[in-house]
Image 1 (tube, rainbow over the protein chains, first blue to last red):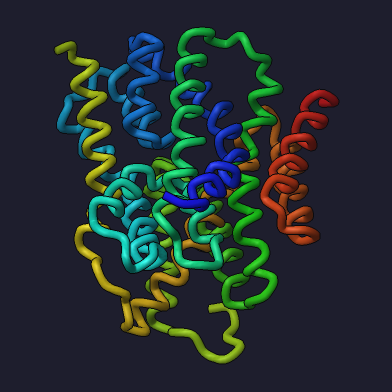
Image 2 (cartoon, rainbow over the protein chains, first blue to last red; image 1 turned 180 degrees about the vertical axis):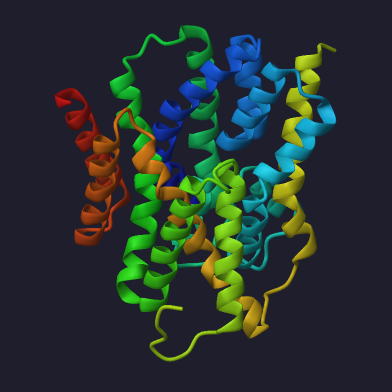
Length: 234
Length: 100
């Protein structure tokens, strides 16, 4: 592991801070499912997915069967299939499967965002660095949330919670400025995501499924109309 | 083993399998232009769809969420730095929430 590890650690510090805030609320949800702070932290250590863990804890609190919970996990996490597919192409070609699977362990929305924002092919050591700074924060935040409950003022949690969303915007805006195709994709994705969230027929969709539905339909549209010179909105 | 631990382990295992599946199936660079066009769109579509409208609805008030979103877009347009964008959005939401 060369310098990439430290670079990855440093680049992921904003994500780590955002994780502290978000996983704090996840800890709150874990106590409602009857988990101890240690169990909650353990779950975060081995899973690293906000939407999935929220869904899982909610299912546990409601006494949902194990099979149903497992199926719901697949559905909520479907977008990771898309993200992992991208990362298989972004990772450098020389990495053996065991390194790729270690990367697969921590395909999160945020690390995916940082990974695809890299200009060069992605080195596993860089990804490990991001994991090293974010996974402990995710587990620690969950532990604190479960142990301390609602001690932190809501205002501070609200403010810290937008950090991760802001990062997604920071990743998509620069390429959207350069390419009208990317700009059109981003604008349409936001519009569709908003419609699916507020329209009565679809507003029962989980976040993960909504994102997967938006991405799948826009990607299929892109496959029907592959890149042309100065292509416009579809 | 307590039931909650079984649930935790199953959730972790299922999540890993979903994430690992493409790494097991796709071992080569994808050349097909249609498939490439499909995959090229995925990062932007997923990230944009996750950011909006969820960011707007994530805070205590619609106004502070909207202000945070607009701040992030504007700062990203002017500069593009990850930390600046995240910091500016957080600060704006905090100020808005304190004033509301």
